[in-house]
Length: 179
Image (cartoon, rainbow, N blue to C red; front, side, top):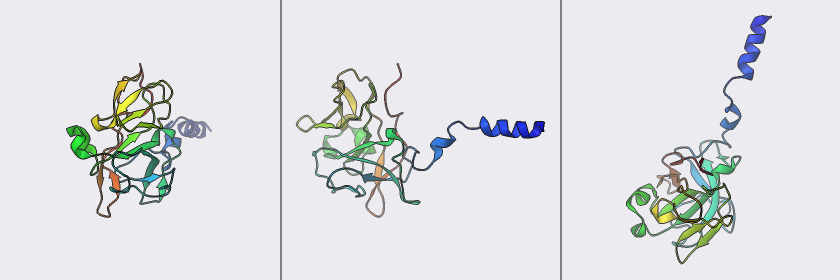
């Protein structure tokens, strides 16, 4: 009887993040593609040239092609995907881009609001909650507002089929920065 209690205890207190390990909840994984989930390109997988350079970012989520899973069950996976001129990018940003396509977390590092604004003239993301602005050409570092940390980025490249794919997980934990 005590061994049954012991086994039950192991199950009950095993890895607390096991629920988060469902494929649709995992953060971006190496080899994931990116699916656009809003607007006229909804359902498209991201590839260079699909977006117009300098236009507003599109919203999407990581997509696991091997098992056809869209990783949208975790709000921290919401992404801003934009195409900018690589010549205008800082070196590290350019190295993490896929021929000018950049993939950033859409979750503000100040209080975790969803970023949905684009200031085209300045080429900045803007959080509507507390007006933080981020520079996507420079690793999405904060420029104004209360945010102190850059947005998390998903380094990417172009695969043999021409799709933008993740080469690593997020560069930092997405979402609000701990104090």
